[in-house]
Image 1 (tube, rainbow, N blue to C red):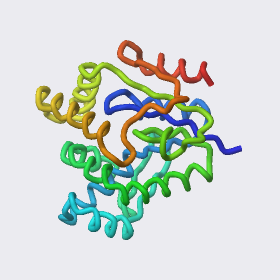
Image 2 (cartoon, one colour):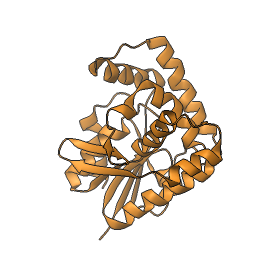
Image 3 (spheres, helix red, strand yellow):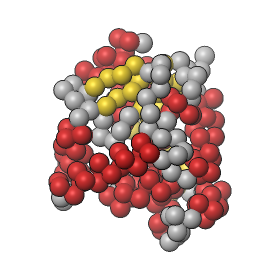
Image 4 (cartoon, rainbow, N blue to C red):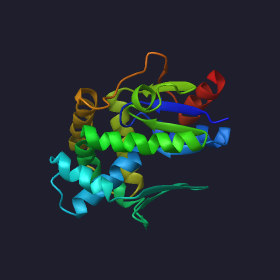
Length: 217
């Protein structure tokens, strides 16, 4: 029986890491919706598409194939057949993804792609609107959050671990702006579903959060 578990929340709350771990524990597939938006953002930037022109973005999306391959090491993101798993994590892509995410007609296409995946297999999916827009009838929903300073600290450590130079002050301001963009956009804004279980991960380890979710399930 196909089941969908959603984990929503702001950037840096630990959604991706937790969702992967829960999916592994349950033997479900992990759906990284953020990677899909990032992949289309990368392609738009590569093709010098006007990120504020929704018609151009919709046209580009119609000519794009995004595949997620689930491996023991995580998720491989294929953009038109090319592995872009690392490229989509750049700061430039991160800071421009909101243009794609806020475009209603682009989100409509993305939602259909995500729902098609959820209709085929049991998944743990994470994002901003999974429990409210994409899978409102999901079997179980969670909303993961953390203090903004803790979220910034996690993001800095993640980038430094990847060998990247980080301007902590600039990154903090960018994260706060992302929060504002996610909360106020008209299409699929960041929002806790009424029936979602809220988890504050500020003082919790990844294992702690995973155990909370498994216990709840």
